[in-house]
Image (cartoon, rainbow, N blue to C red):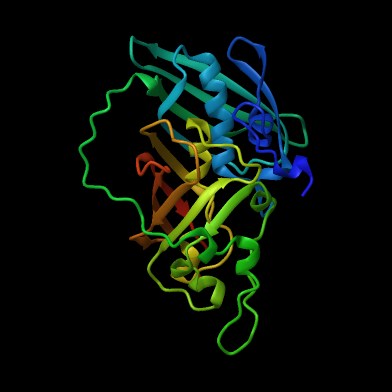
Length: 292
């Protein structure tokens, strides 16, 4: 195998870092060219967008790490130029709070706000080690017994018929996803109805996780709506992420559940666990689904 193919990307020098990099135009104003590599169907993935805004806020605020970040997705973002505007709301000794909005331009050159966030930042390295929890890591089979998105589409039903997977996207080439077979009924044409999705997670170039990539991880798996028996795009309306620890090196485990679909909307609750069996991030989002 060529040496280049064996080289792992490192934090600060990876595709994710390059594609989330923002250029400061003026205090609180940043430019970015949203990459086509993080699209799902025709829109830019919400977790990638959150990481982009998270990076701009990390530059604006005096603290380095997102502790909690809440985003409202106002209109679908498209690949191409965008402007981020940030404001510092409050700064304190252990936490600072800021807000940010991402704008793009319509065919007339007028700005359209795509996403607005409010976040509190701190220093994860300064947190105490005391952990008291009833949470337990998700049980996922070893990676070699799990399926990537590209192989799931080649799984065949017992009858021998192919199981096409709709909604494949460029983002799958940027990620290392190994999906738990127990949550792959949708790929077999036999969704479980449980609203669960579990997977090993990493970046395809081998870059280890950090707090900003956790913002991507919570929104990178196939939608739980697939296991409820629905198809098509499931756009995020609102997403809140809590980052609890700086993740240890190695692959992450992500578990997402939906308990209630009503009125064309569902919630997704995600947990992200690192290789040291620590709960490093949690999230909840409200998403819209197409019924019928």
